[in-house]
Amino acid sequence: MKRIITLLAAFSLTGMAAFAQQALGPGTGIISPEINPDHTVTFRYQNRKAVRVQLTGDMLPTQKRTVNYGGREQVMESAGIVDLQEGPNGVWTYTTQPLTGELYSYSFIVDGVRTMDPSNIYQNRDIATWTNIFTLSAEKGDKGWYYEVHDVPHGTVSHVWYDSPVLKAKRRLTVYTPAGYEDNPKAKYPVFYLLHGSGGDEDAWADLGRATQILDNLIAEGKAKPMILVMPNGVYFNQAAPGAAINMFQPTMANSRSQSTEEFELAFPDIMTFIEGHYRVAKGQYNTAVAGLSMGGRQSSALIRRYPTKIGYVGQFSGVVVPEGDDDPALKAVFAAKPKLFYIAVGSADGVKVNSLKLKDYCDQKGYPVEYYESDGGHIWRNWRVYLTQFAQKLFK
Image 1 (cartoon, helix red, strand yellow):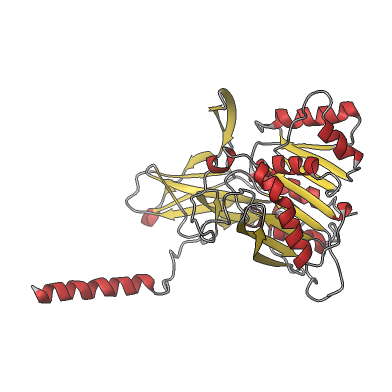
Image 2 (spheres, rainbow, N blue to C red; image 1 turned 180 degrees about the vertical axis):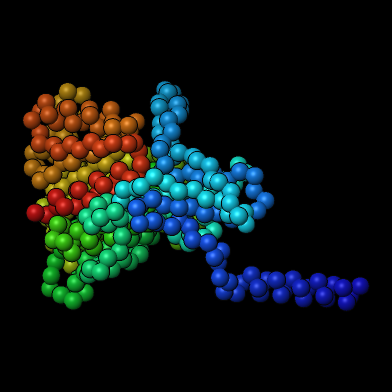
């Protein structure tokens, strides 16, 4: 009996060692996704036992569905779903129509169970959901081109911790410094604070938004000024992204949407104090920009109201603070401080468009200068990357 137990223990330890060692296998040996010369994309998945394999992703025609949101029904767009066709050796395939330049997300659904593509190591996390990704550029200068890495000077991306006396906590930032920052110790740079949405964190814009690639490429082309990009964690009770925070929280949309963002707004000067004390910053209203998506758009809208003389550029992507009454004193103070750019962007199918239009119309009626941009689509990263690309080119000029 002791010998059997000893053998079982030995096999167990051997299995644990095998699990812990580096994965040295060749992978699946299958190319997926494969970007074809005509800009179609072929997906492949091998499973001899599968009965049905489907593909869902934002490269497919969207599907519309009705959802109850805040007590009222709204028509929302969701990713399309198509069937793959089974071929020899249990390899299922599907080829798209020709695609335009973009960053695309997708997953497989195998017999009703959502599955990652085992042949594609590139993945992104959006809140608590993982998807495979790929970028496609049909021609230089299209959206996909700006999201890819090119042979241009590259900035430096750091995860740094700062102290927030207001929140009584250590918190984390993702900070981008432009190419050449380390080589010129006397140069000072304007600062752009970029905020994520509900359920997001300080990794969201760098990973999902491709913010650093966008800035690298725009700066290299001379379309954007060299700048410091600061991406905070806007959920005031979370220190950092999963895996970095002490509390190891599970991200959800609800855990930030249900909470007030006022605490983050009050603590925002702690971030500015840290950045101005640790980086070579060109200080002042017209060297400071704030923008964000969804919850981050509302926070940006609130921050320029709270600190109108400190912020010279504001971008409100799919999220705004609506005017209070017929004579909003906070907005009056904002425009009395003469911001250089008051930018609103939203998708034509976005459920929050109604609030964006309320703010735009109010500003138009008061004669306040506002720049409004409306794209196709809804409340999606595909739009927010475009808004960032446009907004960054308008800063500090």
